[in-house]
Length: 329
Ligand code: SAM
Image (cartoon, rainbow, N blue to C red; front, side):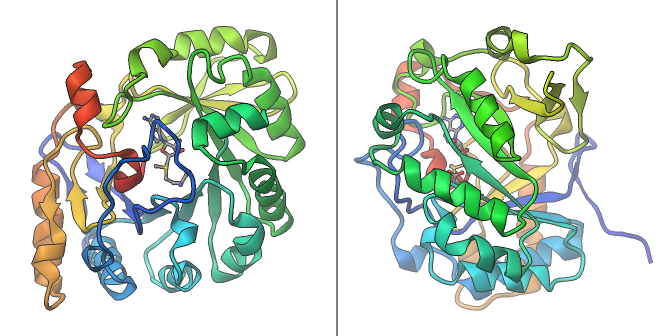
């Protein structure tokens, strides 16, 4: 039997679904989920049966990689069982989760036991005052303990995602590389994106070129490596490890885009930067139907632009589209 694929009109095959299971978060990172940001009502969130049906439909159409994200996915009760359910589905070859790490100390072992394959932890600063200034909370110690717990539980690889911001944490990059090496983790430096709430974006943005300059002394100098389906470019480090740099602003990778996103309130998003969404929740309530789900995936596929576009007009950055916490990163 021929393998089904989701191919868009530009020839790109979609194999990756990012599933935001909540827009709630126990941190308030100013670039992601500002204090006055509206959240969806719980009735607007898909329940785990609905989420599982969406994933199953995606897998039947050719999705093989799932990332559970949020908001903070570990604040939603039932997430461990959801991981277990997804792991039992045939056709998923990569099952990952993105977290801010604050609750990992409690959940790392259970996540591993449920079948989670790998984990990304956000860590923007190793300085308690800076961590608090970014996230609004004094949780740095808990995040570090969570990373250790993930390692002890055997979750591997652990990737540490760092949004690099000028005047905030851009002087910490070598220290973060050292910390990652101590933890057996890999740091990934991400360009700050002008999405939804990045009111300080223009002044804070640091390009990939500048990130590389700041860590030049640590780089081995070999040509960088790119993994198919991955948004990061990897650079060898002198200490034997690698660092990833993700440059969605200065060096777009739309030609390689293999993903769709399911928002916390049940919308399928064809592209991170565009506002067109498919209302999957409306299509599956009151009754989940595979045909309706299949139609939603194809509608989202049809909505994929050749190239995404950030609207960096200051008013637009402030007003919308959605905070990243609702999209899932
Ligand atoms: N709570 C989880 C976490 O902390 O990873 C998952 C959700 S969070 C929205 C996913 C990722 O998006 C995080 O690594 C976060 O730093 C990143 N992110 C959010 N807003 C961003 C922005 N404006 N530019 C770049 N990355 C951003």
